[in-house]
Amino acid sequence: MTSSTTPKVNPASFARACVEAFVRGEAPPSPPAEPFYERRAACFVSIKRRNGDLRGCIGTLEPTAPSLGDEIVHNAAAAAFRDPRFYPVRPDELPDLTYSVDVLSPHEPATIEQLDPQRYGVIVAAGARRGVLLPDLPTVRTVGEQVAIALQKAGIAPSEPFQLARFTVDRYRESEDVANGCC
Image 1 (cartoon, rainbow, N blue to C red):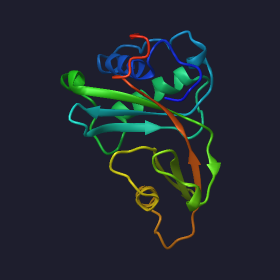
Image 2: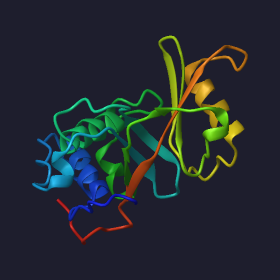
Image 3: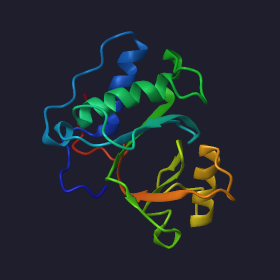
């Protein structure tokens, strides 16, 4: 986490509260009334099983909602119910899930030499096809691996011309309880 504005309520705990409400068929909680949540920013919400296996991950590269709080609500629902790689989250799974929220900086054009998979996320693009990979993933150690995975996700052949962009994230995990806050 590198943000200069530290929220009192951990964004990952807020994402959990949203998913649990959605699974119970309830309205999600309102975003915390904090400047952190009131600003506009893109984010990804990741859901994992306690063993570390991915269970859902959906996000935005640019803000689409009026506030980061609303962006988290939307992406939490999408990660839980609309990630095409997984079936919708069921009530019996809730105790075994963990959450993280990555708040993205604006992305900028980059060259391959300007990438670092521990520091920067990557966006590859060729026409309308785009692939994204968040930074600092434990299984991605090199720029080549990072770009190859993003290209594969986008359906772009490595031999095709493509553009690169990079971004940083402020990552919030439930285990890093910001102020022991929860929604």
